[in-house]
Length: 203
Image (cartoon, rainbow, N blue to C red; front, side, top):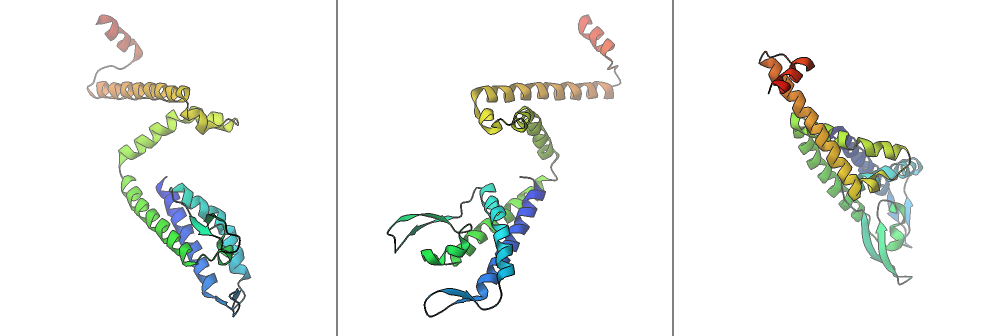
């Protein structure tokens, strides 16, 4: 994940948390235990529903789950429920809304730590060299993905790993040769192909 993506996702998570807080702060329970709005929350609810898919992706992007275990008191079944995707159905499963904020705060904290780490890495030239190297060796699989193949599955096969290793070796050799030519040039020696061939044949 790059710094700008992490910063964007962190901002979206904070906006989502604020919208959820606004919504539930303006609801209350009646005598029958049913939640109802104390003001017109249709606009806030619509905004939350639009943000839910990307919020779930933010969870998965950083390796966190938004699912909790539950036991239905009425149906006698148990399972897992995603508290973000089922935000407006938690009351029926007797899951407190505080669980949503617990999960959101944990993920927001993780994104904040990741953002700090990425901010420091963005000043390291070797970090960008590594990203460029990984992008080059993964380029053949991105072409296959654009053609409709399962690029990730192909990349994990033995043949895919061999291709990545081969491309990585070739790229490393090219980079080394280019650096060597630069050193030779700085030493004031000729670096044309004719001179290099003559040098190699002379040796």
